[in-house]
Amino acid sequence: MRRKVFLLVFSLCAALPALAFQQVTEGTFRVDFQRPDDLLLLDDIAEVHVIVLSGEDASSLSQIHLMKLRDWIARGGVMWAEGRGLESGVVEAFIPVENRSFTFRKNDGEGAGELIVKGALPQHVIHDHPLTRGVEQLYLYPQRDFTGTPKLQPLVEMTSPEGERGVILGAVPYGKGWIVLDGTARETRRAWWPFGRSKGFDEEHPNSVRLGERWNAYDWDRLLRSTAEAAQQTLASN
Image 1 (cartoon, rainbow, N blue to C red):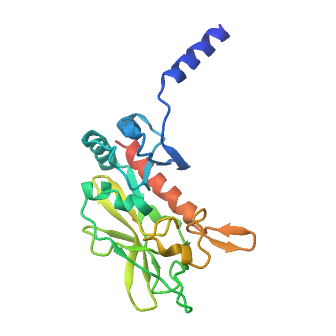
Image 2 (image 1 turned 180 degrees about the vertical axis):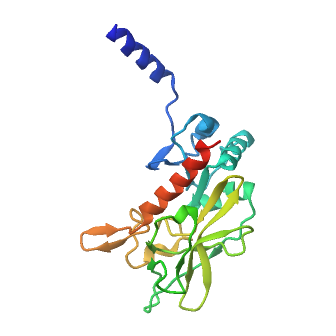
């Protein structure tokens, strides 16, 4: 009897598709544009609450892929666009976006990251929002500014030493869900990401600062958890 149960479970597991989604944290998964058909299964994968777009070439996505993703976000999911994913055209397929470069420099003139503490300085702001619940401290390397995007809800705003203010992280409501625009630096390989020259930047720890032998991401993980939890609650209620 035990053997029959084992064989039945094994057979059921074998019948399930091997997911190409790459897990970032609990509830958060990155899309592999080379294997986009996971998007067709979004309604059947309860553990997926946030979809991360970080690839530039989205030519493999058909209209049906985009429709499935659009409907899932509208039900309460979150699409998080970062790095080259902001250049993929996927976000613009859903909403209009204002996307400009933003550079933050230290006193020595080099591009750099900055620690933001909620309520500490008026020039750097972590806003109250369902996606930022419990987030008090973030270390960010700003790269893009989304000010002017219709219906944009700021999550993090920064001001450069020259007085330029920008929304570095923002969320646009889409149905019951959100589209998150992440303007922080993610990598050094692309020529238009100038962060290879940024003091302390490491693409393996893109929103962290090195303190001794460890990297401190402050509340970045809390931000990801809060986003996934907010999406989970909305998706579960539908």
